Length: 124
Image 1 (cartoon, rainbow, N blue to C red):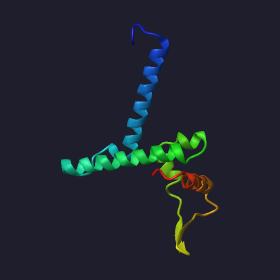
Image 2 (image 1 turned 60 degrees about the horizontal axis):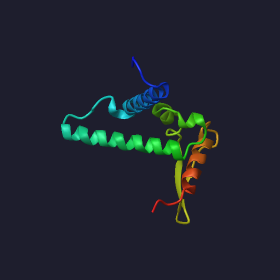
Image 3 (image 1 turned 45 degrees about the vertical axis):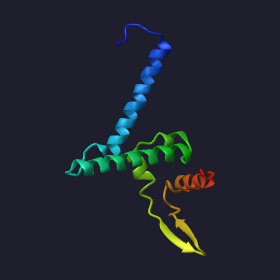
Image 4 (image 1 turned 90 degrees about the vertical axis):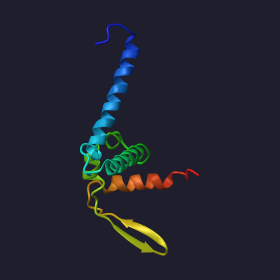
């Protein structure tokens, strides 16, 4: 309802607002919809944990997941498809190996994401 302004500026403002609303919706889906604890300090810690989870989700989607669909998945879909894959950790020759079921429909995407993350250079 802005009476005047350049169309490009108005569209940029609208896109920024939509991105902000997407982040708010994602935060609510991740655990910010309700504060489960009774004390204010405990709920501050809960908000910090939710913020950390949001950052991890955003960085994982940006760095590790390939394909447009995987990058645009909401937290509920990520939990349902990727984070619920039952895997086994095994140690062999001082290495930890993650075994994922080959018959799972999203196992290839998870393996690709882990391979991509391992290929990244160390930040330090």
